[in-house]
Image 1: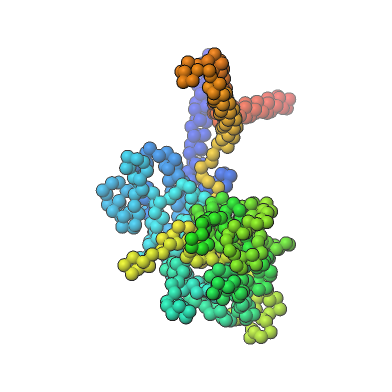
Image 2: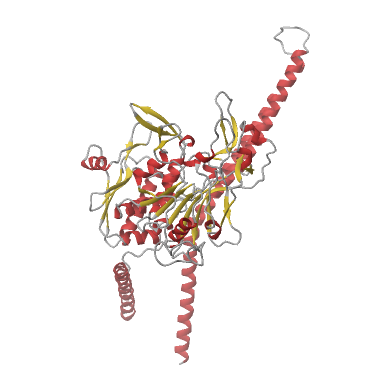
Length: 637
């Protein structure tokens, strides 16, 4: 008995020591992994929500001097907004990840500004303001401020959840501007009077376009002459507006600018309404050429543009009045692009509501071209191409509807083009040229080229997006469309580094329950069908009641006839029946959603532990078999 008891005690001691050893080993391995894999993360989300792009990582690691970031979020004030708190956690994790990858070049501070505190004063000093979140007047801070070593400041006033797809781009853009505080140099070449100038015809000063005045505040805009043969190396983006009748030397200079890695934004037009050479005079139709193009460049870059046609859109055409005293009517060649006709996945157009164009052309990718062609502005399917000759002398906009027939095709008016490009002058400079304007001739782009092409120039003119008025001698422009935002976004995007351009919109952090939404849509369709059935029965009953009323023998009597009583009773029964069916449809919807929720709960709560238990049982059975086989082999030996 004593030996058996001793053996049992020794087994218990062995088991206890084994458990202690396993616990110590587990803790040791955990500590070792913590030190060996410090900062390592594994992102298993479908769209890599918790991983930053290579472009962002290159931007932060290439900073010459440290940048300070201050993330302001009101924790207490957001207690009743769980969705906003979840998004704030998403923003914070992204900022922490970017800071971790910056190798100490980003200094992140997380600040919870309490009311009437120094932190709130600091937020106000940066230019951040609290945003109301409910009808009770409660507000909170949810923004980002950044500073650099030269007293430069940049802010994101409020992180809007609906712009979550561009969260990383907005943060990376802020960091890039702090790391590169000098205004980007933009070259402007235009054949239209976009700046303030003296009009010889009227003998007065002519106001410049508000869109160009806005760009001069944001960028270092340098005006180039139309006969330029060399583009300064400091210019990172070249803006062409109505490039008309350019010489071969100027076209070659533009081509080599693109080949060297310069960014290009070109506004071309089949019929520029603001071209002074083609404006009508003395009631006569305009006779001059109002089209512009880039000669052989577009064909070499894989894009086709036909200056002989303009876009007509029956769905998106705006209602205007061409002449004073004339009633407004739809003008299908003056098109207002809405959110549905813009690229929601591109940072240039994602946040815009309306962009208006007039007598715009269309562009498309050349067949067989290898360049990436991403539309930014597209027509509806109720559109067609109209010959420019039909707009030379248009008596009224209704005339454009004569013979109009939609093709069912969506036409592109603006697009982003990027990729490796071949020069339009593969054999070198044109014969009259004197060599490459910037050194050695390049027959192919040195890196991925970036071009934004818009087939309209009137989009930049004031009448299509601003109303101007004089206030105490000051000219004020009030925007009613997003044309100015469109060009500003395009320049801001291309003026940054290639790393910044490479950061694209991601899938939203908030993932909808697609199956539940599908069930709701199906039920709503059934509900609408039932509602329509009820409405139809109501109308039919009212018609029959009217007939019965008109056929009554006693005028003015308030007593219902037996026929009316029967009809009303039938309708009431039908109404009860239809309402019951509506309740049954809604109940079946709720039951199906609850059934789906139960299945998901079972999968999340029970399935994983069940699989782990099955794996443990299989492991135990396998181990026991091995032990038995080992004992049998030892016994045989």
